Image (cartoon, rainbow, N blue to C red; front, side, top):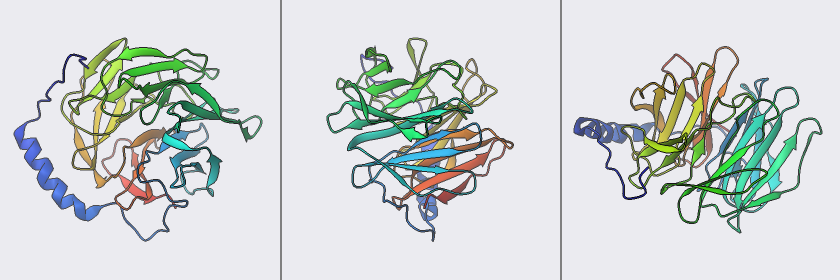
Length: 318
């Protein structure tokens, strides 16, 4: 991402026309249903966080209308009752689970002081820590990833006060990576408690294009635009799935078979979103992708896709 001006994305006129026409038709298929509304009610400005465990569990986090952090633990079949983790959020949350039998989960938010705060759940102790501050200054949601084995700890990113990308480990300090961000960053999550193969961050530039920060440099992902943070996840075989809420408010997806391969191109999934997406994988057979976002009705929804198929099924988180 250039810090000396924005780059104008080259999107074929035919694709733009098709996008506008399809978006109009798709407004009739918003994420709605007869299920009970998400309780407690999500804040309309929240982007959810999601993590998965080695045993098929999923944790969803979101900011409630009260400003507090809410945790929902679930499986492929059902969700547990809401757990109120307190706090007073400006931005966030983002979450990561690292480990297998005794996995720990960290959830990061931006507090009312614009600093980055987190709580850690110890699987061995069965309890959450008190709130801990990483200080700094975050504009919007933090992002988190990890590198290494089961003893790895989270790496955290934010869009700083200067709109640049900033990074730190839990041991600190904050380090400026550069760029000019339009929205919060996102990073490859741990999948089922296992860290990704590399440290890889995706951001939205001032051109509304999606950029990848890897190995000290920004690279433009061809085509596509968004106003929000992207979401990405790495498959066990090295494939990367990249998701955005398009300018038409529809979920769009791009894939890359390996880090050295070219992106396949953007394609529409379905649904109408009112937040940025969050993504992860259920590693059990069949391998299943999961995306969480607020729907047009401002409830929390999850979309699931058996990898290798084109069908996405959406259901509301009650």
